Image (cartoon, rainbow, N blue to C red; front, top):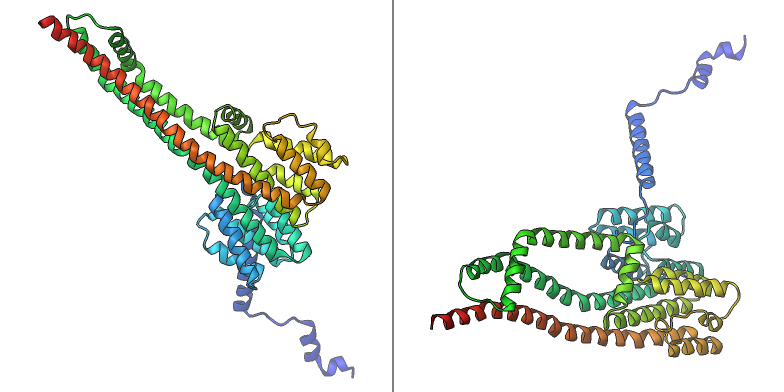
Length: 398
């Protein structure tokens, strides 16, 4: 008798798979579904646009990540902690996507670059830190860089917000007077048997015109203002036109020159000090400027340096002397020859940041009385237009 005939049960046990518990099968299916959903969520995380992440969020992200990693917290746990404090859902999902990529073995700089949370210069610094083993130190530089840029932008905004508010207030008050007061005054003066002076005739005619078209013109003005703002935010040609107009306004153009030179010095100096190659520095620099004029300058310098030319020769091809004044060019050329380029650029940044701060304060101080004078002139015009016919009427009665 064969062995198979003696022990048929043993053969059956080997050949037939053991039945699986329905509960465990259900758990495995559930875990598989969760895994699939997680993978699907990762695929749907898109790169954030430049305006999707606020400046305060960028500063919080870099500052907190730098502190946590410097104290020994892992990158993945640090990103998870940061994500819990970010109110914006898209940004929070982007941070969690960075964490997942890092946990899967990816590099931090590449994951951040794909997310769009930080600028190109910040990503370049993080890359250099990961490759050199100085991630915590370079993240501190990124944090300082982000804070510095936010400070510069805040100074520009603070210099422009108050005058802009006064101008809008002037338009609203003038529109209100023209829409509600002048038409009634024109009806009163037309019923009087008195010769009107030139100011009053102008006011009456303007009041009649504004009573018919005032609401439409005011509405069109604010609608146009809204679309111009959207265009400046999302359209580079419109933004370039707006920048060119600002570069023509005295005081504001000086502030813009100073802030961009300060930005150039700090970003370029900090990247060179961190050990990045000059080509990578110039590539990051072009993405960090807030105006198209300085982006073009950075691209010209980059293309010439890539061809093997020195920065000194490159400056000869830049004709915009206002954007890069002679003393700044000479300082950069001399420091390049002496090997102190990064420290010199950082000093230039400090000097021009102080100049920008003084200019911002002076600009606000100068614009405020000019706008108040315009308001006073408008009030005086209306007052004279009303009072002079009354005096003429009283003289006729006598």
